[in-house]
Length: 232
Image (cartoon, rainbow, N blue to C red):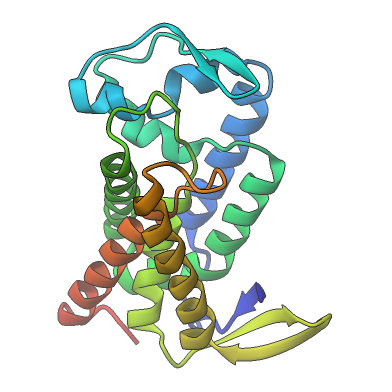
């Protein structure tokens, strides 16, 4: 099921932070990553660098080739934030931005724009740390907004469980409950995440543990928002 729209809160206007995050992700990919592969290998998060606090500059051998880890910003922990605004390709970028476009605005309106900024960044960082825990000695860079967007999905399912989401299903566009759409997505992430722990590496290039870490953070954030009365 591919979500393309949802029921929005009425009278709330533009979700400026969500739109800004989408713009930043696109601009970083087009103007910084595409022209320079070195930028990607410098600003993506590397598990071993985070665990040791040390910038690692060396050539890394992988099946079928190698890549060069470029000098990272100082301190290396900055990459926990920079990596969540980077992507591995057009499809990776488009998929993440679609989910952020569909689900981000309602969560931002419910939490408030300022709180949403902090929530989004925390979910992304927790997601990255969860992925690092799977293989802390890895030199394979990790990047993408998936952890943060998974946090948005977690908060959405708490704040708007009865909302309907328009999805493409068997070549047709149909409205289905958000609880079903996000619930099915979450089950898939947890199944693959368990498998990822078993093999102690990225499964098919997808950081499922980052999704799980971000999603759980989002659920907690959603309940906090509800406790503060920031929900419909």
